Length: 204
Image 1 (cartoon, helix red, strand yellow):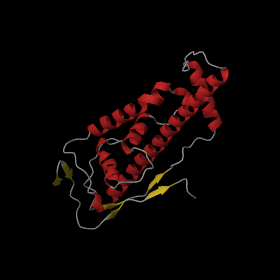
Image 2 (image 1 turned 90 degrees about the vertical axis):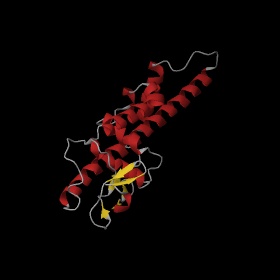
Image 3 (image 1 turned 135 degrees about the horizontal axis):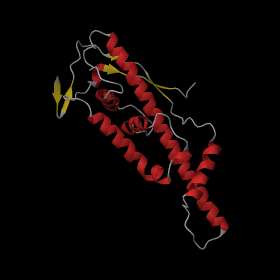
């Protein structure tokens, strides 16, 4: 085991660079009907009484509702993008497990745990070490979203508090709790020994 600063890295036999399975991601939110999402946002504004009563014209009130609805939709689409990345990363980790298991020189690096293996957070760290381009998506938050939600719920299932304030906290707590279950010693995969290709499934 190699130790650099406060990081411990597993020793990978040999000198060659190992090609890992490609990470297949969908960068565009998989929302088919934005008009329905917008309607859900308007319903949420009405149900939670998000527009305070002020002496203003009806036009001003409607404009504020529209701005707030657009903001809610934007927050929701950001949630979906993070969830999609997290879903892709967990599937990629599963593919990496099979790759490691099929190669004699990599087989003994991974521990045998129950899926989703907390010890596999080393693959998340590897993506971060490789400085993977995510278009603004936080990798740990994305995985936390996927650990929290099996499928992304429709916007009407959320409170405005979740979309505006709580989603990052929930996702980050889910990820840190999952990663914290990794048995000691916590070791990272040396990024210089692995190659990763990112494929955008939204590009034809």
